[in-house]
Length: 312
Image 1 (cartoon, rainbow, N blue to C red):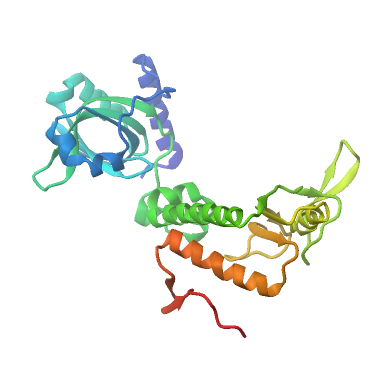
Image 2: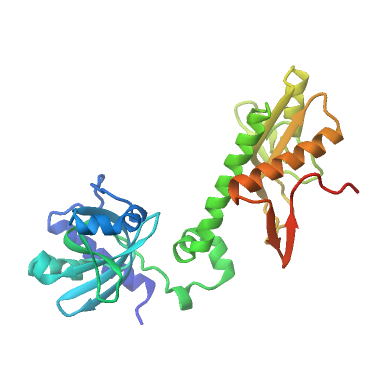
């Protein structure tokens, strides 16, 4: 079995062969007409009209069958099978593809849509173009990339092989977006406070320490935005919030990182009862916006977030 270094050398030779053929290995532009999710959504109509499609993405699999090759191409929205035929793209072009393209490469393909005998939606390729040559092979999904530690340290690979991880990233982004929309609909102003601070505070935690050469002074990465947010209230703002990174130089495990995202908001002239009702409204808003209902299942239990919540 070839080593990673040997496989890289093979791919470098292919990269050089592409360049010698006068082809850009890393072109700056693509002529994509559709994302894969758009193709799948309107497949029957596009196939019926024999409309020429240009799609782009990463080659996730490649299977050669004599004078034809099937591959799966994946972009940020979905995956689609592509069908390469020697009699369609020409013997020279077909050989060039087989000799120089690998799983992991980014490709642009042009063609029309059809369904295979097994009913799989496919693009019949008439032309293709290299978008980016991958110099390292992707790890084999089941045998080469199962280690939890490696998955967490190489999130980019984890995202390639585990769609559920990508969905979590997208869900997190949506949650933050909806939190911002809710807070601002309630009159809160988004602000940014200093990350480098001369005095750390707002939480009981050990800080990261650094040094500012320009002012010849020690500084700390913030452990909380609290003190600066409160200064804004002193300055006259009534409702402020910040969503940002904080840093705590302490122990770490799967649920505790030395840097993480925090939400803090401050509201003048309000008491804890106002905040309790506010929290109920926020959770109801977020659940309706993100999930469409107020109940979720967690560890086998169904939790209903409909207000009012039980007071203890």
